[in-house]
Amino acid sequence: MVFSVGDEKMTRSEFEALIAAMPEKARQELASPQARRRFAENLSEIKALAQEARRRKIADRADVQRQLKLTEENLLANSLFQDLLKESTPAEAEVRAYYEEHKTEYESAKARHILIRFQGSRVPLREGQPDRTDEEALAKTQEVRKRLLAGEEFAAVAKAESDDTGSGEEGGSLGEFGRGRMVPVFDEAVFSLPVGQVSEPVKSQFGYHLILVESRGAKSFDEMRGEIERQQKPEKARATAEAIRAKTAIVIDETYFGAEEPEPAPAPVPPPAGRP
Image 1 (cartoon, rainbow, N blue to C red):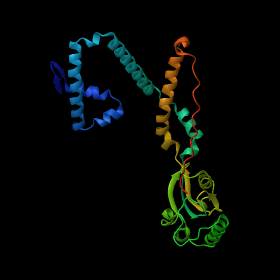
Image 2 (image 1 turned 90 degrees about the vertical axis):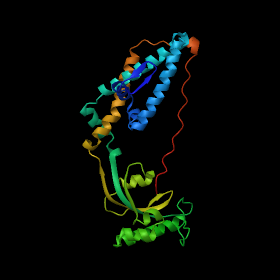
Image 3 (image 1 turned 180 degrees about the vertical axis):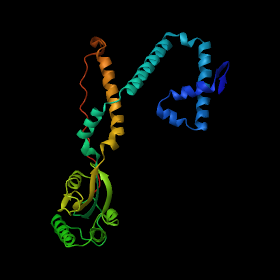
Image 4 (image 1 turned 60 degrees about the horizontal axis):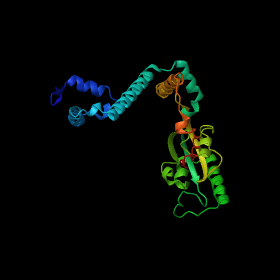
């Protein structure tokens, strides 16, 4: 026995079966003995109050009966959806088709850059550096590029010249990142430039960039298979649930509710700020 409330007892197997039936997140929260004890204490209090409610015949009231019915139907609907999730394993052909359609999303690159800021940039002005106009910043960028093409080491020049002091201290390294992590113009350059080649000046709101892509690749189908399946299972389950709803005769009395109003258009989502 785990606990008793009056004459009602809960055995260890009943208690563990109750936890096993909970959603995964709730089960994880009850992993420790201390968390299970708190759950048992809360459950004991609920049962004590429920026993008193039964003695008062509260469960026989019409308003409570309606709520109990709604709770039962909600539980049944949720349990059905969990069954649909288990049944909704996508075929390999579906998973592969999804992978091919979204392959660019799984690309990543490792790159370095040198930033030469201009007036109005959100990048702070380095101490001792002039606040260059757009034309001056471009000229400086082209001068730095000539040095790189002449054989100077990219990392050393980045440490000395880059106005992005964070990456500059690391030789201009931005590490490895996926598509969409940088501002669009920078992202487009990184995922189109030849690997190992210093770019022409690339202008963003931060200034002019010289970019060196060190490597670029994409996760394989086998690496992404599990994640894609996890994404597709809920979609397939929702499609099945919608099919069940669609084949069931549902009538809404518009004389009671009034005609359905169109949903307002969603607010535009601003693009991610990204890194310079």
